[in-house]
Image (cartoon, rainbow, N blue to C red; front, side):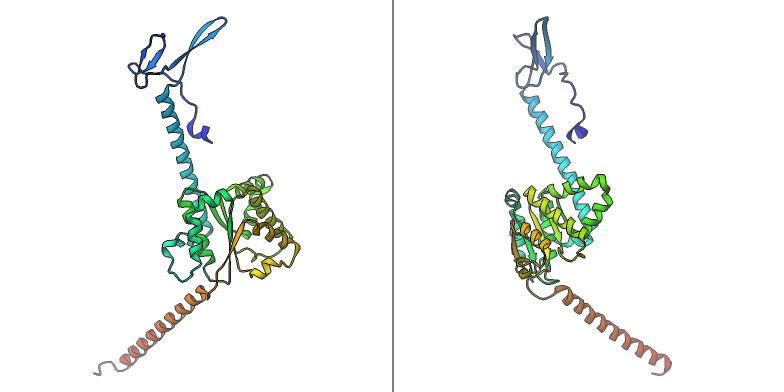
Length: 294
């Protein structure tokens, strides 16, 4: 990849005035005074070749670092776009928009803040609890924070992974799973909600197993009660949860369903607007019927 971005490294041809001839007969840099030529002794005669002095070496490494930074920046932009395509509301999931209604978000904040250490340890989280308690929001906040820190991260459902694996085809499927295995942070949203077909269980087991082998962090959000996680109902889930539990900490998101509360509030506001509108129409109708009467 670097070679594609950089291309061939040009030959070193110092400009006149950027070097001088030293006592050894070789060209020397006028900045650092180190030779920019080296004499090679062959049995059939000597040959002089160009080389990099100290300041040219430092400049070269600085250019390589800048290219690496640019490449990383492009990757982060790409993954930011991918996450937005998978979940259009992901941009609104930030710690700055935390209204304080879910105390357990403090664990998500701490995790994101110390992600570099979590990455080295390969440690992750299980965010569990009923629907609408802020699990996906917390995971999305971590995702955006990690992306802003310059790490690649992906938040995706297992159903979408299965769909994309099929789209990748036979030849591309291996590369797709390698990407999932090696990305610094993988977040599986709503694990356990997909229909439990043989194919889906195979995909789930492979993804979780690959993450365990790579020792990269994994974050899970799920509605499955913790008792069912500790005591899985099938052998397949027993293997899956065993691998997940080995490198994750469970965080229980309790509380009321915020989505249901928001929906109820919206219904009440809509009902009030309809009542106001109905009253206005009723008044307007009466005025029409009595047009000209004061």
